[in-house]
Length: 333
Image (cartoon, rainbow, N blue to C red; front, side):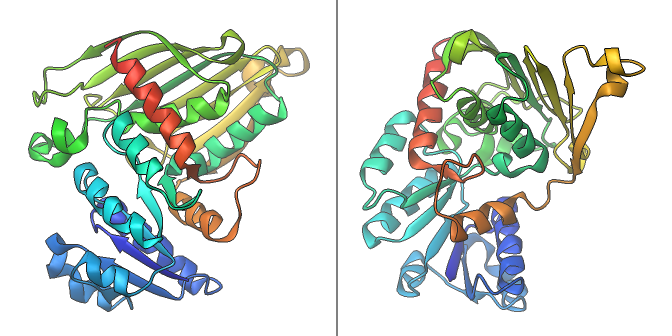
């Protein structure tokens, strides 16, 4: 397959690395095209890795790729997708699905076929998160009582000048990015829908007009309680998901790099009866650096038709559901 990457920032480069692995591992990818008008100084670097450089979206379209990965700032991404959709090209759009529900609905309505747009929500493919979601589906926890999710980091000096904290270019603050990842996972755990109940936001450090920390209380299927925290003013990076059910529980901590390795452990109700204590009764399911999530997501997208299996890339409809919940949450902030 021929795949193009538009945007060669942090995520675009991660996607490119994943494509190179798929090219070398079984030849799933035959050619890789790259395009970024703001990274022309990197052209030789990518050409040394056997990438074909394109100067414009027109050249990308002329190359007739089987898939285009759009990994640019959110405002530019919407414009690129608008240009690609009429060409009938499959698109992997890095989250979020536009900067608003209205943009998401417009993009979805412009699709020429059902799976023309897939969203890059790679948290689904973190090994610990994937295993936890599968346990939830298989009933390990029993009826889920509550879900707690925390995602926080502190960025870096000067970030206030970047597009990521620009309310127009990014579409919002920490709730849309990276918070949309958590809303996506919430919808998987509660396929019947999510209702925001209350929330609070804090802003005042970066001072660009966007929310910098958000706390939300939501309700899912069967009165499931969802407690969600997202922050870009946490100076110690943290990623944690806890599921508590009537039969058992699971805890995922870390997501690689500054967050530490991802560990997923789970336990059964009153496990202490058959062990030294409750902690001793727990099983460590997996430990990972989460570096292969982009590769695994792409491999699944390129190889596997969508099924009822929980480990599938995020569809346009699923992404639209997350964007609807996002805007409902904003009313409480």
